[in-house]
Amino acid sequence: MAEHDVVFEAMGSQVRLLIGEPRPDAAPGAIAADRAQLFVAEFEAALSRFRPNSELCSLNADPREVVSASALLRAAVRAAVEAAERSGGLVDSTLLGEIESAGYIATPEGPGVPLSTALAAAPPRRPAAPKVDSPWRRFEVDDGAGTVTRPPGARLDTGGVGKGLAADLIAAQLHGYRRVVVDCGGDIRIGGAGALVDPYDVFVEHPLSGERVFALKLGPSGVATSGLNVRIWQGSDGSYRHHLLDPSSGEPAWTGLIGATALGATAVEAETLAKAALLSGPERGCEVLGELGGLLVHDDGEVEAVGPIAARRL
Image (cartoon, rainbow, N blue to C red):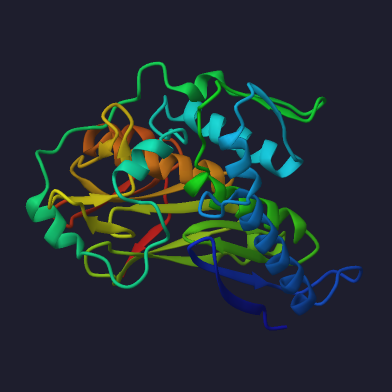
């Protein structure tokens, strides 16, 4: 049976669902896809920083230290804190003020600045570092009380971690299907027992050329790619900026890497490792990806395979 394949725009990116043959008690793939698309709309309405009426924006604006939060918001806050912990503070979701100051205050429209142009004018490369005493360390989630505790004034941007969380949650909803792929803007979760014996080819594009350069053969797992090419713009001072910030400076990070693809048990884990590797720079990035495997793309365009990864160069 052919897989049900649907693509739609959401969360400032493209979402793709591949839903395989259902078990006898599961709904047809088209119905499951409709339910998943509705969930994504609800997810975005609750957690987008670009929607003033979202629950996330309400949390960010609330002057109280302890705030009631839905199960979905609590899950997003927990994922953000765990990503920060896993990355040693490099994947910091509390840099909302800094990203706004950099000029990323709305979902970009139209073509951005070419990455090659930005690289030619970029400052000297250096690894990113965590922000000293970042407020993410004082976020707490209490599921029993249904609350989030954080320093008043601390604001959260779920960002890429949110896309990974959405992919994981949708894949969990689709457990009744032979094989499943959920791709939320490059954060991918693969599921289904059938994917163990019949894995998927996941293609990785080069951030400079946009061409497919590697194919990964993957069963149930997470995979994510983080790259500077996704969003680049020119600031009011004429400098080129992107959305991956060095937490220690609050400025766009130019580390010597322009892309990283990571494997993980979940899409959130893969997203965390990909972003942490890119922010760490070439040497430390290899260490970040060494255990589970991945790809690094250097400033000069070289693609480096790292760790235990089943990758085929195209």
